[in-house]
Length: 113
Image 1: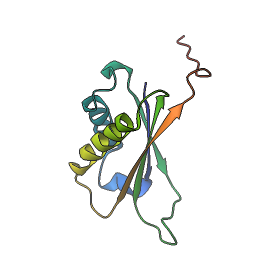
Image 2: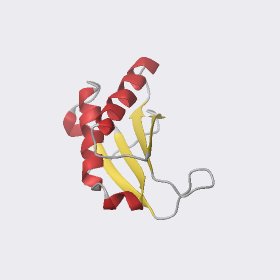
Image 3: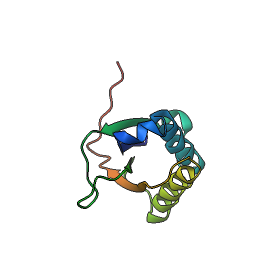
């Protein structure tokens, strides 16, 4: 835990590798101090079609899905730590947003095969 999902405009791939974005998310999650590094799961999803308002504009949206029970302060620490890592990437003219979502602990299930 957590599940870190990076959605981004596919056009960004000409400027930055998806692996760089995943590494930034991972480092931010680690530096938040809330998770065991080996438990952080990250993935990136390129969006072929997108708009910001009525314009085609680059974006990165990061969803951080964590088990419920963390305080608002801890969630804010996590989102700010991830955003701080994105500030170090060679990006411009792109909107970067982060949201922290609770996973309902009682219904979460996991199977490793």
